[in-house]
Length: 172
Image 1 (tube, helix red, strand yellow):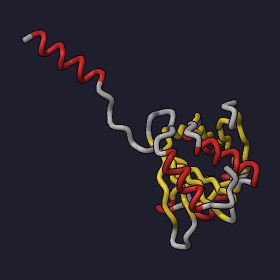
Image 2 (image 1 turned 180 degrees about the vertical axis):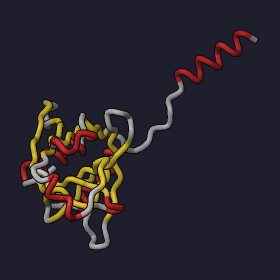
Image 3 (image 1 turned 60 degrees about the vertical axis):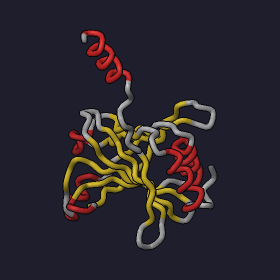
Image 4 (image 1 turned 45 degrees about the horizontal axis):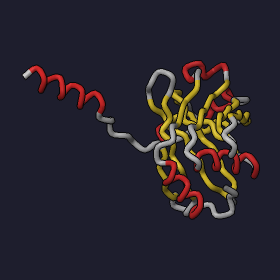
C-alpha cells in the first residue's frame, strides 16, 4: 500500500501541468491583426499586451493596473516603455519607446507606442522565434506597475503564423 501511495505521489509530481498559450491572434472589425500577449506581473497577477499590425508596422500597447478617464491622460505624459527581447542570434536587447497614455475599455489606462520598421522587425522576430518578451513601464505616477511584466513563449507558433498572414510586409 505504501508503495502505491509513493508511486502516485511521484507520478503527480512529475506530470506537467496544463500549459496555457501566452499569445493569441485575432483581427479587429477593420481586419487589422491583433496579437494579445498574456503578461505576468512581478506579483504574479496577469495583464495584457497587444501588438497590432498597421501598415506593416507594429503598434505596442500595455494594459496598466490603473484606471483613468480622458482628462487625466496628461498626468501620464512622458511614460516610457522598455521592451526586453532577443535578437536573431539570441543576444538579449532592450528597446526604449516613448509611450502615449490612452483610455481602454472599462476606463483602464493603457500605454501605447508605435514601432518603426526596424523595431517592428526586431520584436516580431523575437516573438516568432519563441522568445520571452519583457515589458517595463516607467513613470512616477505608475508606481503600482513597477517591475518587469513577462510574456512567455506559449503560442508563439500561432503568433508567427498570424504575423505572416496578417502582416505580410513585416520582415521576419
